[in-house]
Image 1 (tube, rainbow, N blue to C red):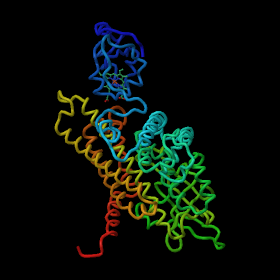
Image 2 (tube, rainbow, N blue to C red):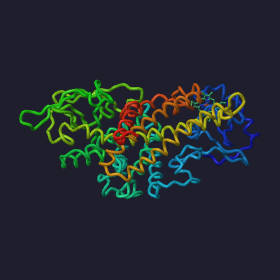
Image 3 (cartoon, helix red, strand yellow):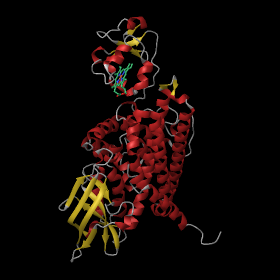
Image 4 (tube, rainbow, N blue to C red):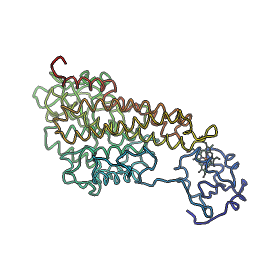
Length: 512
Ligand code: HEM
């Protein structure tokens, strides 16, 4: 930025179409050559030529617009300092409720140690620097994640961390060594998931190898073929190959028991022949492996299927970006060795159910973090938006909406942290027994909160809340995509019901 200093009187002289200067936040911008390119038109800029346009600007634009057009800034106003806070890559927001309580310097928290804080800092920087710029671009153009970003995440072992705590982290240097593999717990897991979802691109968030996060966990836990398991771990965590989870079908979504894809053993007992279809398979378009739920003789089983002869994928157009690679998958006489079975034959339900816990935990982390971003957006907007001669936030009805949003987000984060604490204390086996119900209830509640929050946020932003560019673009995307979390990994009502049914398992067998 230029170090030139001007007085307000000097700026006032540049008030024609030939020389249009304006002041925004004590900085001087020469917008003469920008007049015709301005998306809001030349007229509005002419109207404020030579004047201070700070309030008009922040009433209509996001701060990032100024950052993008910084080259038009020709200096500052003598004796004045910029007041607008620009949050740099890796930095925390200073807006109240924009960060969870544990990240606010004035509060204490019993769950997080120094390693969680180091990880949070490093993750935020990584996300702001590498993930968000690509996420924003891919969200718009609909193309798949770049190999360059995958390689970068693999090198920092972010891909490995996204699977949660476990043996797969052993010997790895996590984000330059900010946390030791042995101490990586469910709060580190939570930090990674929440920071990743800050890129504000819901389609890309899933396109960013979400399929791996929900399927490689099952491979690690249930694939009995050890050399194959190790091979997949190496291939997927190094970013060379991609894997996805293929359970839902046109015939069966959350009703896992209703699937129709079949796996029949060949007469020599050496192979399965798989036939059927799968629908809404995240990353299916670019996956090399499909962790597939199939009907077998006496129940159903989960089988690893590599892409190959007989496997066809086609794209499903959903309401979020095609960059998620959502696929319809067809298996036509696909032959796989019996050693690709995961867990035991006909016992696939166990595999799927236990795998769901980590999937739903991750989804809760993301969903709750995204809702927090919406609170931040609404607070910022209602504080700077002038309407009927006042700030929007001066209207009691707006404060009521904000109060509700903040309460939902804080309550959900506190619940999430209390479940992460329980997961840290429990073995994988006990998690399967005890955490299915609470996680199902939290996910169901968090997505109901998202529904309420999206509804209020759009009303607060008005027309901008339904516009894909400008001030309301994050609200528009949230309102268009929050439903994904309410459907993927188990529909809201099914999960609420599961929570109650799991609770009933622990009801004392007595009249009380
Ligand atoms: C350096 C100065 C400015 C730059 C770089 C700039 C840039 C932009 C951009 C990129 C947009 C598209 C929407 C968005 O992405 O937010 C926009 C829209 C607009 N701008 Fe500006 N602008 C500037 C100053 C101003 C000023 C001073 C005014 C009013 C006095 C203004 C009025 C508008 C209006 C009315 C729109 C349409 C907004 C809407 O549809 O909600 N702009 N501007």
